[in-house]
Image (cartoon, rainbow, N blue to C red; front, side, top):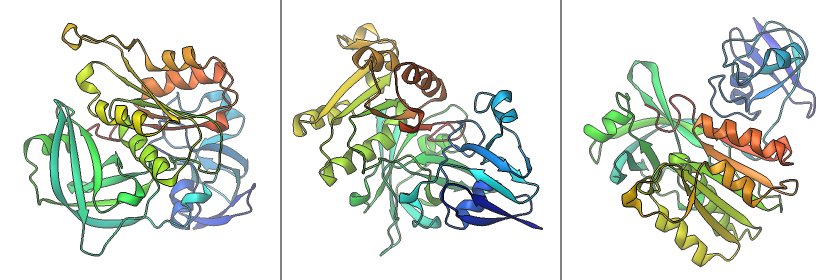
Length: 340
């Protein structure tokens, strides 16, 4: 049994197979709906059921409230059609023509940049390239039908090798392997590119980018792409971390400020040690953003990092005038971007 699904705003139609989520069906047929975690945790894929019925699936209460559900909302990464549907959903036109593929790759280099951060350099087979948008992610495919998601820290113009920033999680299935067993020349498989976290190049609004920990990875790709494309609108990066060693590419961000007059960089440490001798910003990164930009009505914000940071930022920017349509985020839920 299959069901027809129509996106009201665009008129795009696609078909969902039995027990297939709305998002999976859309992506399979080239309709790119906004999404991030695919676990029902972040809320990026939230839209509205205009007509029809769905099985809402399992999801985190913070991603969709009971009131939102009663008003017709659904998380399309979890919702399985029980009838033909008409939906309201955000579509991402810039990603729609990029195929999602399963590809082999080889580990060419491992570089430890902090006690718990390893950079992986991956090379595809000879003559192969991955088409992607700066900020998207890939799924590393593991045995037992398991996968771990990692944001690409590479810009598309520099795609000879793909760069991942892997944070070591104690007991982590993949990150443990990276830090203890992985060697150069090892083979991996991945699926991608995935996600709708990327720079909207058509905008001219001043742009704030907020990274937490290894959430710096996709932000790095986005910024390097913007610099290469000659985008000159104001760009301000805030990088939140616990202590100075956690800013594992601090010097790179500082170099960007010297090379690009329209770029600013503000690192923020929540718990610097005495050895850090830190004289910069302290506290939570979203607090620094609001302190500098009490009125965000003219801006757009891109944020990438752990769920608590994303949730705090979402509430803060909304209270200071940012439209929800101009907040783009990649919440590193569960196994995303190195959590295992």
